[in-house]
Image (cartoon, rainbow, N blue to C red; front, side):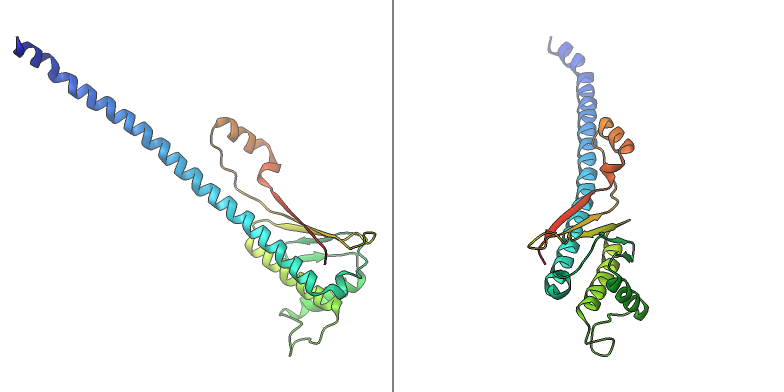
Length: 192
């Protein structure tokens, strides 16, 4: 009687092995998807950290040059698109033209130093615009300093393009149809 049981169970172990391989394969595919999502999330968080660092950098420059920023009369926001800085302040616009024409760090000894506060602000903005354009893809920024507030409070708003990664089909549909999801913003409020 033992012989019959042995003959019937021989093929059964092969089926068990095949089912186990299928289960393991599905599990490994899930792990690979989680790994890809983790790498994409790392890239997203890196860009967001860089945006925070860039905003803090400009905030530090604004605090160091309080002579300009506390007295600036900006009726419109300063707009940074790529490496172009646009402002409503005529003095800052002319200082930006001088700094941009120089092509180097303007307010250092041997270049244009000593600089007036408006020229320091122009040099800081031009340098910052170049840095933001280098570190963040398709970036733009707006610096708003409403003159009515005491103490003066400025807002630094940075936007950039980001590759969105979807976990499932529903998220893929959202990311493909919603442009705002792929263009995050970082806002920093500053008292220069």
